[in-house]
Length: 280
Image 1 (spheres, rainbow, N blue to C red):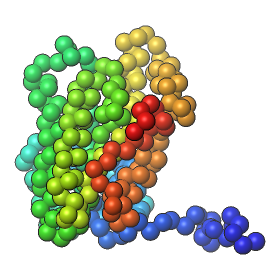
Image 2 (image 1 turned 120 degrees about the vertical axis):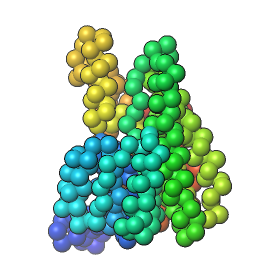
Image 3 (image 1 turned 90 degrees about the horizontal axis):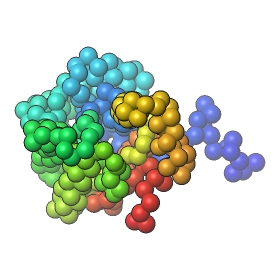
Image 4 (image 1 turned 135 degrees about the vertical axis):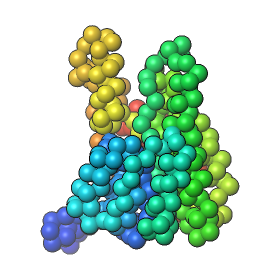
């Protein structure tokens, strides 16, 4: 029957994919060995992009790169890099350009700063968190932006947090610094729009990643309950009554850095199951 579900499937039984125009692009995804960074890298590889991936642990990022390359056939360059260190970032971008000739897509990402209240953190801890969360996004952007402007095409996507719109208790470092990334990105978006470069932020909610599991264990231990009970408390706050999955987050990320999203810039979009209560 015309228009039936069967007629919309490929012979293999898979649903046809929308062509996002990412085939042949080169994407740098930071902190990509696990969690959201890895999910985004996998999605972009499936769309046909070549990848430059990094994390602080060489063994872990090399393993991730092999697995993505074997699953998708993507050309993947994996390098150890501490994104809080300027020299590491410069070396990462230069290595990517040496291999692929350019960086078309940048996805900034970093492990989250430690949890805690204001009085539990020293000035040194604030400075370390600033280097990790804010300066890493700035320096990665600084290194790739000139080439994007010269080619008059580029996509910059910052992985921030729902805490930007609705602060999360006990995460003062993350709440403060991810908001700073958002201000940086929103301002930059206006500066580079005429060069065909878009700058957006994507705000993950409670998603089933190693980071969220670590937070749940830490918070549960403080309260004398199980991690499962603590996660259930989060789920009660989410209209969908469940944690998100990394692949659900990665689907939006892949669209925002694609050719199809050429008129979307300066935005911050949540992937949170409805957790944020704001109207806008």
